Image (tube, rainbow, N blue to C red; front, side, top):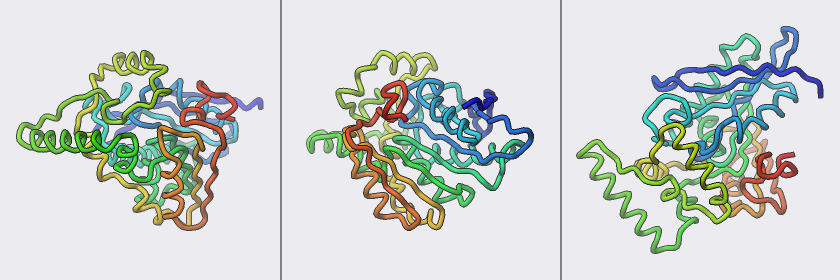
Length: 287
């Protein structure tokens, strides 16, 4: 719609790590605009400029400044490579709010959060802790990571997985080192996830990420944003989930929705799968 978007590569600090991201700002002749922090999913397997740029662009066209970034340890952000710890990612989201507040183009009192997939969990957790988040949108989000990881496994696989986590926890406390595993050993992939296997692994390789530590799995067992979802009220809360999502059961958003307070809304996109909210996968689903 003819809006001029200014895009800039930026950085800010979170937990002592330099975080790398991109800000998009609509040209408004000096008028301050609301800002949106966009949080990506499980570890950002894709280049931000592939998976989140379309959301950033579209929000910008609608008159918002949008910020997309790599969590610590991922992409070209600093931090231990591949160390994905959800509470730390939620802290990165909160520091992204602070960064937007430092921008002269952004109204510091008008900042919202948008997250997809695991980012949908992180924005819920961040907003529950941080009153500066004035509204929250969670798409294909996760209310209870333990329940989610369990839903991807048969019972014997789940028991084996828990045993591995226990063993690593003991080894880690003595040695200070967590075993590094393929990220898909933690989030068991569904067949459609593996279609772009080479793209995904190529991306991790590009940034020198060998895998994720078992500590990631351990941290996920206790990460249950739905337990604090009721703290977001009276700020508005929108849940979007895809009816045919086999990566994250729609039950995750429904459960979060049920546990949160008004004003809230749940939208189920009939006939769409998990990744079909991204433009690269399905432009119609994205719209």
